[in-house]
Length: 123
Image (cartoon, rainbow, N blue to C red; front, side, top):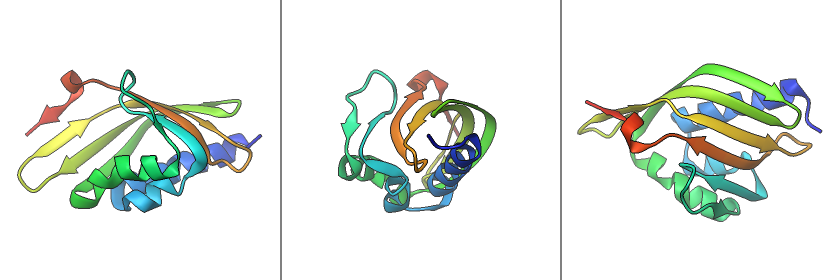
């Protein structure tokens, strides 16, 4: 099992990639057969290729992220963070709570994002 420090570092890398990386950078943090459900209740994406396709929207916008709270237990982490997306035409702010599980190498094996459209602030 990955150590709590390794999991904390993986969450930090994830937020850095979402905030300033490419879809490939984010997808590289996932295990090959990982699942992603964002937001919870939508059809899960399965496998790194599907996950990279999901994150491809990041490639056309500018994001910043800020970790607000993080809890690690066993091979899992739950964290609350802020992501601000600048599309050039508008700014969208959301503060999801993500729950992730990790393998022994601290790669993400599952991710579930808790948020809904009502949580978005558009300016």
